[in-house]
Amino acid sequence: MRRIEILTFANAQLLDVAGPLQVFSYANDLAATDGQSPPYEPVVVAKDASFTVSAGLTIAAHSLPDPGIPLNTLIVAGGRGVNAACDDHELIGWLRRRSESATRTASVCSGAFLLATAGLLDGRRAVTHWHRCAEFAKRFPQVRVDPDPIFIQDGRIWTSAGVTAGIDLALALVEADLGGAEALAVARHLVVYLKRSGGQAQFSSVLALQRGHGHFDRLHAWIMENLQADLSVPALANQVNMSERSFTRHYQRVTGRTPARAVEDIRVEAARRLLEQGASVARASLRCGFRSEETMRRAFVRRLGTNPQSYKEHFGMVRA
Image 1 (cartoon, rainbow, N blue to C red):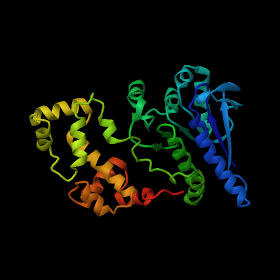
Image 2: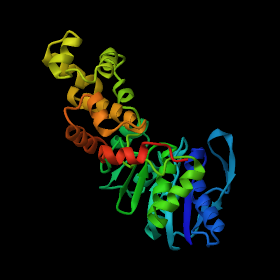
Image 3: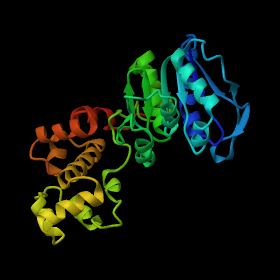
Image 4: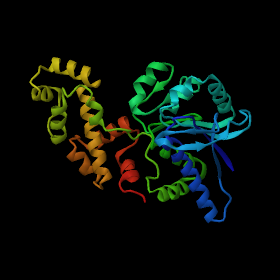
């Protein structure tokens, strides 16, 4: 039996705790149905015995165990209370020592702030909720923050994006422990995907570009409606009545991306949607303006860490 400890605290995000907890509990239920011993011993631990988390729910937790006792998995929740938890030196010390006894350590959402405060992410790739990635990168420059993925594994440390990504993370851990069939069975009971690919973006590319007070919103709308058109810098500059040089400079300042990167991101997002709806790779490539299937494949690998066919196989239909 693998002991799973989920560390929480006052004002933690409820779903950061309940999501992973339910995944491991379902894995135990399925094992019991098959007449097998439960593979997991999931417990919620905290410094305080009783406290309130998000949505006003009061929960009771087990006390923090001896940090030296062997442990399979330590999962750290996030939420509004994470900043106060980061200032709790006693808790951070326990977390650091407890992680040393764990086979693997993981965080959900802003729980990554706790791992980083404890020094557990130094030199590693990590992700947190997209809304706090910039803050995270500024506070912890020694961590290689990647704001896009749903979750990241770097050695024995796993980090995941916001809220529901904790379920994806937990399913990935079940898959690593018990195999894909068991993870799929759990996902079916939860009525979710087997697991979203770790490389799948955690938010819309178009929404991510809308941070310049609407400067280029009309251009982005035009791009989405004309994916098969010429979307080169000269063509885009012409759409907004700017010189190429001025357009390139202002666009990158406002959106944080080059025009070419933005166009590719929008095309990839549109292709993802088509593949999820059952379109073939060839059709998605054509409709989204890629010059060839190979061009789209390279774009998918760059942006999502997977190829279009694999993406289609994972997300082409809801597994329920």
